[in-house]
Length: 251
Length: 387
Image 1 (tube, rainbow over the protein chains, first blue to last red):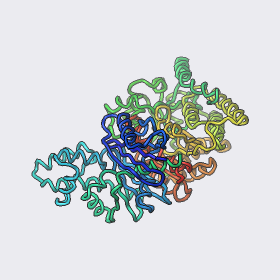
Image 2: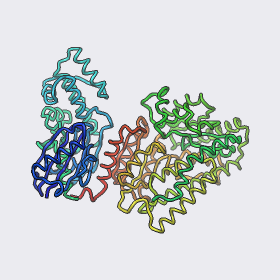
Image 3: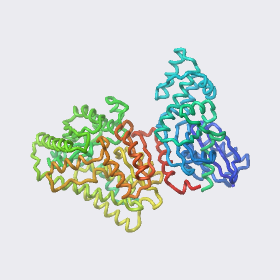
């Protein structure tokens, strides 16, 4: 029996497959312009690997969760991230999920979500913010992270992404080093996460999920800001889809 | 299936806007009010009609923003927008407006609104915990009474006040009985219907007819309960909704909760139970009794506001709730800051799951609100979370 978790976020779709208790497959693809199309592509790809949807249990999560017609159930990304993180870490912790559209802080108790906080409907402090700022600097998110490590602290104070972009452009114009601007951009996110995390209430162990967990310099700078080693994992970006697949076993 | 009488309740919207026009044309005076601190009794004792004014929909906000800052709570902007666009029949037919100094945003907006129609402002004390506050509030009651007597050329006698107090107490009693039906498990009325019934009663031109309608609704709901007909099944998580007021057009969080399968059993806000909890003492001097009742309102504009925690605690037990949702309208500083205290109280003292949802009247964050609400319910629903 296959248990499939599909996490269609605003930027990327993540898929995880369990064959009984074994995690056999994780893959990701851009969400693109249509979640419905993405879910079709996912189905085709799974079927090529002889994973038949009809013989499987499927849980969909993320903003595109309602666009997966073959899902047996939809569950929010909060619950799925919580479940997936507990699987990856094997312990309770505070999860920071920096998503494309929003940032979430999730507290796990006994492997279950006991409490969560989400940022408001604004891109500041999200992965999308980092992506837009990287575009403004003309670099990739990975390059931005590497540059940030070499820069000096610069303040980017705008709470609004559009204004923060103007601030970045002014800094470029004033001849500030690109590395320092990159550092300022990362600080802007880690600062938001810091406030959100502490208002929420953090436990000792902090685990980062979402695409940014693969940007090592970001994890380093976030750990510095939080004065706590932020744990993550090679599969952390799949926390949502892994959690969804595990929850599919309950159906 | 909802109770049949809910259709009549819902029809009040059309009926009342016609009735207010007829009453106005027949020479009746209308006093329009916004807040649960406003003593309707004094207006009724002046033989005027007391109505709530519109302020719960997104529609007129664009017009309000021509004069008001964008970063202001939607309730204030909506109220002002209705006032300047003549889209609210109750505002249009009001002869007098009664305002009150609750939050900073409202009191400054009232300075602008007061230029449109004759307005009386009652100065609320900032705390209810003090003897002086009650004295001040009693004086404010008298000032409002004098204002109405002068403007409407009537005499408001103690006897008239007593009659009005009895009438309003009867209305409160009926609404309270309706609300308490949902303490039953499962709840016989959806939170949406409960909200509608309570919100629409504010626009009732004919109080007696309004009380009668609510009593008929109670009868029907009780009959349905005997037959085992409920709004939700036993498994639906029971939610207490607290925070900023809601009405038709600003029900999105309540709606999202019920669409996600929760049963909103208690509405601890000014458009819900808050104003019904305390009756006016019918045996005291009427002005003192009114001052005491209205000052007891546990609103976040008061400091301290421990009464709100006490009421949330009491309702949470009485309605046997599984979680508390605190709604804050964007830029409502008093409720927004107080949410931190409410969260601590609910989580630590009541040991219940809590979530604050901050939003406005627009649809711009429907997706996010849905995720928050559904995820919150998933933390409550045991079957989903079982490993």
